Length: 462
Image (cartoon, rainbow, N blue to C red; front, side, top):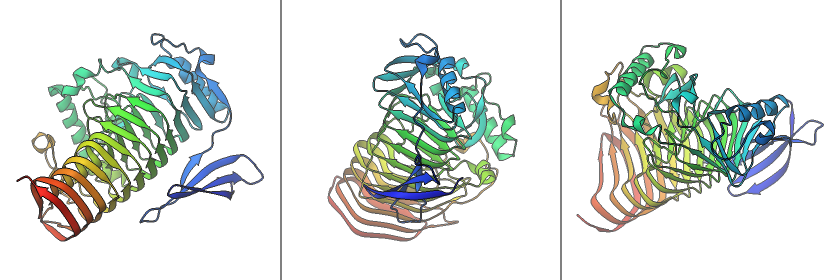
């Protein structure tokens, strides 16, 4: 990269931003957001896109929700990329399409009133592309919005991404054929079968694609748009470096509809978003078992702040696919306004290995939860009896902090279930305020140095 001269310090909420100019050039290249966190974290880069516009209707796209705009959108993206970058504009209207594949230096801007409506015909998402399925790399149906190995990419604007769901609905049930395919992929990941040989978009495997999946990309911006529904995980950053997700309104209540999954990804800021999910809301992952050990990339340096979670299984979930390791995660000033199963949940099992270090939740508030705080080292779901344990590795968990948090109702304040082979240690819960506790105050096993200070509850209902 060319030498950059840094000027124009801008004070923003919780961070300082610097506009970076190239030598001898008055055009800004990046805005560098210096994020304040209880760990060292390099500034998050926001690319400033060239002021060149490529409206999709100029390349043959037609609104109305019936014309297939896949080729027209692809043409606009290609022209933008070849011109050196800019903004691909989706005007107001309903634009029906198949998969959208972004390229470097392209900002897909959804104008106010624009609705990108995705096909629910699985054949439209072939040929298969390199992606992942629940922590295992493979080739599968193309995500609805996809990028691989791209630099400086964005989705912005006040429009909406809205997939048709009816065609995916029969795939939610995970029938026998799907479970057999999952077992096969698990075996391939456990025995070092090359990723290009893991072809999953065949037969009745029925492995649903992500809505937004960026793979091995850098300098990502997701800003201002809405999402209504998803076939699978909603936003997934996989092996990425540098990202900002802000001002998003995400609603997805189908099967496995996580809000945002950051997996083997680093240097990310998530702020001022609303999530309303049928699964976990903000999720930190880092791959499954041997497949993640092979890659060896932790998820690290992530700040989530000023977000609202309406519904979700977790406000902050870590795992259970976390074999590459997780460290340096901060969630602050976030709120669960309706109900969540858990405010903060760390989950792993004896096959995962990896580590979870230096995770912080502070100044977060909720209405109702099953647990305010939980760590469980024996979460296997359907995999417990479905597939064998190829190798046992115990997760190292320590230095986890919850501070200045409260909730009106919860079944329990905290529950920590460690593994005797490597006890959980150095857990700190400080300034915790709870209204009513319905089942028990706290439980812990196989732990060392669990510190609770200034923890209060108003009454119990047991």
